[in-house]
Amino acid sequence: MTQRLADRVAIVTGGSSGIGRAIVRRYAAEGAHVLVADITEEAVEGGRPVCEVVAEEGGSAVFVKTDVSCADAVEALVDRATAQTGRLDILVNNAVLRAGKPLVETEEADWDRVMDVSLKGAYLCARAAVRQMMTQEIREEVRGRLIHISSQHGHVSAPEDFAYGVSKAGIAYMTRQIAADYGPHQIVSNAVAPGKILTGKGGRAVEPRWIDYSKQRTPWPRLGTPDDVARAALFLASDEATYLTGHTLFVDGGWMAA
Image 1 (spheres, rainbow, N blue to C red):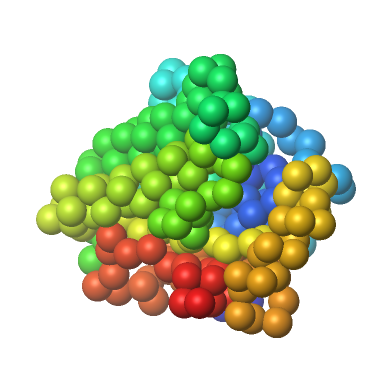
Image 2 (tube, rainbow, N blue to C red):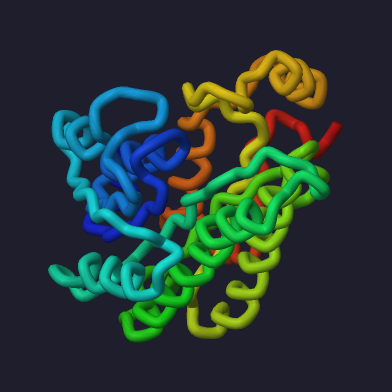
């Protein structure tokens, strides 16, 4: 590895499983100290806790049990991140929940549950991170970087997944608003919008009708992997991403081009 994130401190929410897990491993392999913020160490798709895997791979990661919908928990997370170096260099807003229902079947409790984690959680984490980053010295033109995991379904309809799609549209807007408001302070805000990513999770995500639908929508001759997203998140976290803020990078195999 090239150690593109050497000595950086990063928070990855929802980092125990799926896309978040791949980002944790990729960042740690590139030299970052990563805080894995999640409600559980167990991986949805199975396997050992990601911090154990990172340690075996020679990286640095620590699990911090965090409910991102709770402001006090998020503030404590950022305090933990800055305890050793006084800096938080990277926040990855990845934590997400889905309801998997169209509008008329979406109960108020479904809506609240999705929004609390997927949108309110991203807002609370971004707010706490930017507050900290505002106090930091500039390195390579940047005080800190935010990477929000959005979705192509925040830009086009999310079939039968109303609350999820609305939450991801909010993430897309949040990305731009933070970039516009805090660009003058040299804080960077970008997003990665994955297409269909096969994380190893079962259930609705891998029902044949949704796999067939995704294959029909995706020009590239395969569906995505978590590491496809992690590589994009690495670029946006690195010093190679210069003069670049308020942008959504689609990692979707051409879904949005078709």
